[in-house]
Image (cartoon, rainbow, N blue to C red; front, side):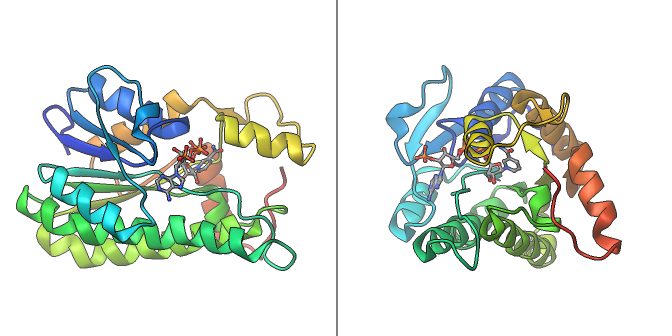
Length: 237
Ligand SMILES: NC(=O)c1ccc[n+]([C@@H]2O[C@H](COP(=O)([O-])OP(=O)(O)OC[C@H]3O[C@@H](n4cnc5c(N)ncnc54)[C@H](OP(=O)(O)O)[C@@H]3O)[C@@H](O)[C@H]2O)c1
């Protein structure tokens, strides 16, 4: 897809990777709805902030009415703090699944007709290498990302007929505050070069999208995918 002249909606754009998506899309000549639960926190010149909670159907429906010219949907927003599946707090586990899986699905269901109307367009779901392994301390998040991978593959099949490119971005470790807070809580020190700069990741993602790719992997994402043919093992952080 050509991003120059495209109209994008990015979820969770008030911080982290979502913020960088908005900045880079604008730089590539797209119009951008920068959505966030608290749109007043979005301060990116040229972007159009809109309020959106992807787990609230009324909020999703309102965004679809407001942003009827979208031809690129970037599903980036997620609650990433699920914890462990057996011992973790059930509310946190549900919230992680709710945002990563059902919230992403609600966005796709609301915007699929809009994309069709606007020529097909594209959807980019932000997954994680955790989808293809698991992470001690956050197995609930890894499981939710696995579900989101399955969702992405299903939706790609269903929307092929309307010409929508459905892509997955599968990063490893990306340098956002959320990642550094997780590392601090778990006493993890990342080796030099292991953490990717969010702006660099977004550049890779948008290059892949423009090239028509359906699975865009950074080096750790590629490593995790290659290991799928081996017996399951946790991600050694
Ligand atoms: N950082 C990494 O190492 C890494 C690696 C692989 C994949 N990823 C994926 O990349 C994406 C962004 O990660 P990040 O590190 O940038 O995360 P982040 O800094 O924690 O940002 C998460 C964003 O999602 C928003 N959000 C959460 N629940 C939402 C909801 N129900 N409705 C709307 N927005 C919601 C948050 O809004 P509030 O500010 O209101 O909470 C925030 O804007 C996620 O899908 C994550 O799983 C990250």
